[in-house]
Length: 484
Image (spheres, one colour):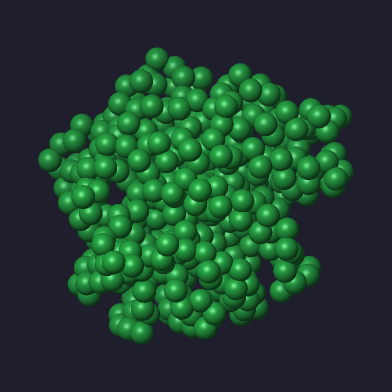
C-alpha cells in the first residue's frame, strides 16, 4: 500500500492510476455545530444544539459534573462511528471520508501547545476502521484557535475571525499540524491533510502567508501526504492566489460547492430548467477557475442539499425532497464531466442532511423533541434555517440598518456570501439567542445516571439510524459511473 498523490489535475496511486475520491464528511463527530446537530457547536448538522461547542461542553459539565460530561462526549464519539458505519459506507461504493475535527481535542486554550494524547483516541480508531474497509480518509482541521472564519462552526463564539488578527493562534495551528504530521506520516490510508476549513481572511494576503507556513511545517515532517487547501471566503475564492501555488507540490485545491437551490432560501422552485442548470455550472466553474487556468487539481470538499422533515414540513416533505434530489443529480452530472473527487456534507445527523440519520424513536430524539422544535421555530440553526416564523421580529432591525447606514457600507465582508440579512441573522439568532438556549439544552441531562447518559449517547449508533435511501442510491450510482 502506497500513498496517494496529486499529479497535475488528478489524484493517482503509486502506479499513476487515477483514483477518484467519492465520499462524505463526518460532520457532527469531532466537531459540533448548530445545524440540527447534537449540541450545536462544531458538529455541523448533527443533533440540534445551540451555541458553540465550548459553551455546550461547559454547560453540560455545570449540570452533571465533569466526569459524567466527559463520559457522555466520549461515548457519543464512540457510538457515532463504528465498524457497522464503515461497512455500510463501503457497501455504497464510496471510498473516502473527510474527518472534521476541533483543535480543542488536542490542546487547551489555557494550556497551549501541550498535546493531549487522548485527542488521538477516536481519530485513530476511525481512521483504522476506514482502512479496514478500504476507505481513505482526509483529515480536516475544521476549527482552529481563535476561529479561522466568521461563522459559528469555527467554535470561537463570535463573528470575528480572530485567527487572522493574532499570530499566536496561527503559531498554535502550525504546532498542531506538526504533531499530527508526526503521528500520521506513515499511514498510507490517509489520502491527505486539509489544514484549514473555510478560511475567511478579508485581506486575502494573510491566508496565502499562512499556507506558505503550513506547507513548509508539514513538509519538513511529512513529505508524503497530499495537501488539500481551501480557497478563501468559505472555500469559494482563489482569485487572489496569483502564483502562490508555485513550490507547493503534491497539493490539491478545495472548493465547497453548495447551491442555493438546495436550501429553504432557494429563490425559486428548482425544475432543472436551462437557466437553472447554467447557474449551477457557472457557480461551480467560477470557484475552480484559478485552478483550471493553471492545470491544478480540484477537490470538492463540501456540497449537497438539505432535506425537509415531516415534523416540520408535513405533507410538502416528499415534494421538497424530490426537488432537492434534482439539484443533487444535476450537480453530480456536472462533476462527472470533470471526473471530480468530492466529499458530500454529510454522513450522519438527526435528519436534515445526512446519508443516515438518528431515528425519532431513540432516547435522544425523544428527550429533545420539544427543544428541537423550538430551535427550528426560532431559526437558531444557521444551516438551512427557515426563518418564516420569526422573520417579522428581525426585519425591523434589518430595515433600521438599511435606513441609517449608507448603501456602500451595508455589505461587510464576507459579502456577497453573507448578505445584510444573513449577518443580522448570524449575530442575533445564531450567536445571541442561541447562547441563551445552551443551558436549556444541558438541563435535559440533569439527574441522569451514567447508564441513562450512555443510552442517550447510544442513540447515534448505526443500529439506531434510518437510511436516506434516495440520497444513497444517487451517490452509489455516481460513485461507480466514472470509476473506470
